[in-house]
Each structure stands twice: as C-alpha cells, then as structure tokens.
Image (cartoon, rainbow over all chains, first blue to last red; front, top):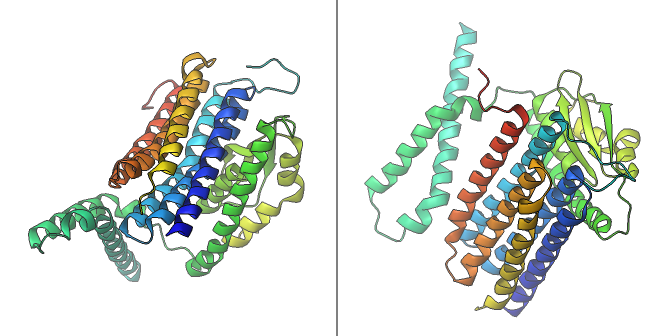
Length: 104
Length: 178
Length: 91
C-alpha cells in the first residue's frame, strides 16, 4: 500500500510541476505562437502524468479504464485544437515575433 | 454483380463492427456503475442496445473507412511508433521547459518543406507528430503536394525536420509511402 | 488507503495556475491570446475535476471530466474557425 501511495504521489508532483512550467511559459513568452508551444506540450504531458498517478492509486478497477479514455481523448484532441488555433492566427495575418523585436 | 455483392458485404461488416464497438463503449461508460449492482433486467440492457443502434446507423459510413491494403501490417508497425511518440512528448516538454527558464534561446522562424506522403492517415499522423515533437508546430498542410508549413521555435528543431528527416522516414515506413 | 493530502495539494496548485492564466484572459493583447488562455483553462479544468473527485472520494466525477473534455475541444475548434473565417457557415 505504502509503495503505491509513494509512486502515485511522485507522478502527481511531476505532473503539477510541468503544469506550473506551462503556465510560466504562457505568461513569459513573447508572442502568440511561442505561447502555444509552451501550453500545447506542457499541458499534454502534465495531464498524462497526473492521470497516470490517479490510475496507479486506483489500482485495476473499472474506473481505471475511464481514466485511460480521458487521457487518450486528450492525446488525440490536443494537437488538433493547437493546430486549429495556429492556422486561424496564421491565415488572419497575426505577425510572427522575430528575435530582437518588441514583446507582443 | 460481384461488385455490388462486395459493396453490400462491406456495408454489413461495417454496421456489425460499429455496433459491437458502440455497445462495448456503452457498457464501459454506464452499465458497470449503474446497472450491474441491481438484478438483471432486460429493459435496462435494451436501452443500451437502442442507443447503440441509433449511433450505428448515424455514423457507420464514416466510422469504418474503405478497405485499405495491408491493414494488419500497418497496424503492427504503428504500435511501436506510438511508443516512440510518447518518448518524444517527454523530450519536447523538457525542451520547452529549458526555453521557459532561459537555458536555451527563443528564435522563432517559419519553414516549408515537401514530403512524399499522400494518404489522409499518413498526413494526419505526421502533422500530429510534428506538433508533439520538440520545438515545432504544424501550421498548414497542402495534401496534393504533401507540403507542410511549420512554425519552429529555434534553428535546431527546424534543422531536425528539413535536414535530418528522421520522422519523415519513420512515418513513411509505417504507412509504406517512401 | 486514505491519501487525501497529495490530491489536495495538487488541486490547490492547479486552481492557482488557473487563476494565473486568467491574467491572459483579461489583459492579453488581442483576441488570440485570450482564446489560448481559455483553452488552457479548459485543459486544467479537466484535470481539476478528476482530482476533486478523489478529494471528496466520489470518483464518478470522471464522467463529468470526459464530457467536459469533449465540449471544451468542440468549443475551441468552433471559436478558432469563427476567428479564421468571420462566419460559421459558408454556403
């Protein structure tokens, strides 16, 4: 029991650290496109790690399969929504930040 | 005559497959927590069958695509690719974290390149792979020429797509479109 | 097998990151920064629902999380297409 608790706590802590990194990137990066880099990747891995921690804590029951479904759905949907936002901004002509420009 | 028989055969197959998957999905989502603790009752199960039938007749055309060639071989090659992709997600997050905390530089640029991929599955798989690997996000795809427009966060990730071309070869190997 | 404290800490961390993200929703320059921040808040809300389900020991919150994931995805796609075209239905 104790080993399972410790392992799932480690996964939860790693996931929340990565979520904090994504939020700092959202505030700190200079323009829209680079902010999408931070959020799209950090949120995917943070969500996978936190749900993995919950799955290890739960053991093998019926709820584990539902957690796996949530994680797999986000793994498919996350890149799609990132790509949709990126294309919308690129088509409408949002300027791309180059090195040395002012923050946008 | 044979052609219509084959089409009819494929239609029956796709309806049956869609119904099985939808009913299993219904069982997974609701039956275990709500229905199974109580005594067995046909009317409750028939509700699930009815829901699965409605969804089946609405979606069987788009749920099962047309018969491709060598589906089993492609599926067998696709599973190790998913494992490699999960490892790439880990590497990508470490890369972005380094750039957030100022260890690596941020120097965005937009690159374009052509690939040899043509089928829908290969194009979508490669676009998602670009988005999930370190430092690059797909902006746009032109399916006729296999041309990708990609936003890269620095020069290193851009070179890994245009010069090394490791991922093109992997996706081309999986979908046999080298 | 009572282990509420780690889930409580993770829940508080995610809730405070949602609070920090709302800075971009309120002040972020332009439409697209606001859309990205709203998308991120949606993702974090999915995870927060699951963790809250474990805190109050009612794991059936996962059903709500699954539905919320689907709705947040469709909402993001629709808002992105609307910002791209300026209309939702092209005749």
